[in-house]
Length: 237
Length: 388
Image (cartoon, rainbow over all chains, first blue to last red):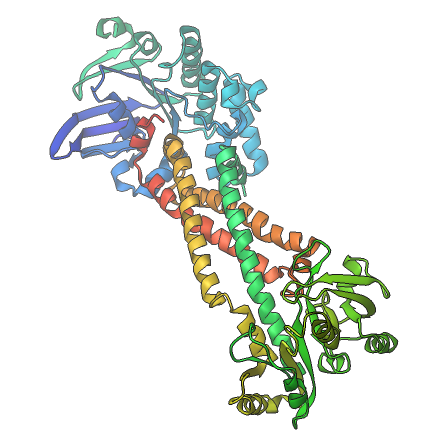
């Protein structure tokens, strides 16, 4: 395992069982992502990009192969260790924001910190910092229903970064937003990558969103069909 | 404690469902608390009467059959008996009230020797003994209905055709676990009225006979002796200690203890279903949220704990309303005044109230286990895909 890579996948395969059928989703995939990279995963529906994202995020386990993140091979971890590992290392951004509707923006962002031993004051400081980074300091007492879609996604990003995770995974983060809000979110992700050197893996259908990433990977039928740099993005989309 | 806010917010997420669940637990526990309290009071009263060495003789055929008044003198004259009195249930209506309070025809000369835990001013007792239409009432009856010495108590006969017009001549007092709402009148007053106005219909009946024994050890042999003497008469009797009599009385409706236990189990089971169903619905709506929590690092045990905390909180709220609420309600509002002497007092003890609360917590815990286990068993990925 190379210590220069934030993420390293060695011959990772994934298949699902549907009754007696085996449905292959990813086929012996190799991938290296450096620390501080902003990687976009594109591909048609069913190509395996969300499955790949779930494997990288430790939400799922491969059928075969190794996944190394920050020097840790994930298959070595038990379920509870993996849960703990996700809390320490991963920040999640979902397409549908997935905020808890009965909690305020502040409380939603605070959720991952409740798993830490931080004092109440430290938690408050970190939440306010995260909300300031996403530009929602004035909305901390608002409930999700009182926010626009773009604002909800920014709260979700604040929740993703509040623990200062090693890796941010984003599954269609702009998929449910209008163009202007999507641009704001992409600006924010770019800022996190550029200013805070966060490693980001983003799944998207949107070529415009993928354009904002430093590197684009295209998947088709569970295989990497192209590894394009930002400059060649137009050719693969 | 840092998760308390999250648990409370989830409880308030669907106010109607939570309120209905709380109400179902509260109402059920309220009724359970009353039943258990009824048993506890009977036990308490029974437990304290033993020291007074009293026996009660009734017809072996039951309450509906008379015990001849001659039995009072016969029992009173027996060796080992200090005093005896008829104890005739009149059951009259007071004003528009039915079952207003207990009214007994007694022997004014002996009744306070038999019930010596009661106190009565000597001058009032003498006044009562000298007035054939006089009566003695309990302190609580006097206070609640503002009845004073000299006031009239008209009673309309229900069991007996004779209406009585009694005058309050004395007010007795006694321990709180005794019936301080009874009205005792001269048995002869009713007897004479029945003979005079109704050709003696219903006369000659002592109802039951209450007697005080010289010591507790002699009670079994005295009971046996009394019943043996009447065995071949027209009115065979059944004599037992006051404690046994009260137990028999409280179990007229069957074996109340078994009944209450079975009702209690049925209530607990139905509450488990109600609360469990509410939690299952609540969690089904939150499948995606549970998956998100697990994705961001909440462990299965923590989520299990949060769900159980929520279901216990809802059930305990119901317990507080139903069980603790009943304690304060009956502390404030004494329902025993409407029991016609069947319950000398009615209050919910802290032991009963806290036991109700423990039952509520157990219901919450048990009802949350299955939905919580199902919630954490789902895979995170399936949960995230779920659109509710």
